[in-house]
Image (cartoon, rainbow, N blue to C red; front, side, top):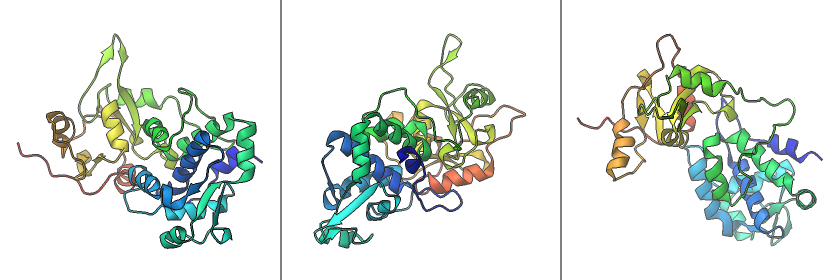
Length: 297
């Protein structure tokens, strides 16, 4: 059985690029727990708050429940659920999962495969990360689910899957003249830029192309905030700052809240700006809440 292929083909609700990372988040969490305790089980009532937090932080902006993946991941044949009544999930309702003492864990065949081949766990985790989240979030997401992966490694996606265009970073940084499009940071060591990254507006994992019209040159801080939905891009290519962001320090005000309604810096003349379709996708699927008004001068 090809567990990597099965991991890559998790059935997820999808329409017009809508993000539904519920199953991948539960699967990553289960792999992290397996890495810590290969014989352990996940009682719904014990992990419900952890899963809620993961969905709130890494899921789509709309509210959702961890009961959904706890029940539905069973259909992908990597996860099993039993209750006080016996094998099988009682359904996707929170009340049913709580009252029946629902417990979930990886299916026996997968647990056996992970014991035989310990490296399989890391390879499966990297497929889940690459296919559902931008690279800027991989490290902190692994910490959040308790996964320990070797740094610097990547997993080649199963045959037939899209591969990243390695030219993307250089094309985007050149288009924005090696400056962060939000704050203008342009640091270098000698001739080498440091702390500047190419961000996808529509995430690569959700069919965002490796094209300049879908890219932004951002410093490391603003890349992370953009991918976490704190920052976005509105009409007229002006910066959006989420009303949900809270920061009381002068640094937070200068580097985040003061950006509200400022125009993007770049791209240079002759380069097409971010396409409206990609801006719209990020606003719907990543940006949190409503944007702040511009700070008074």
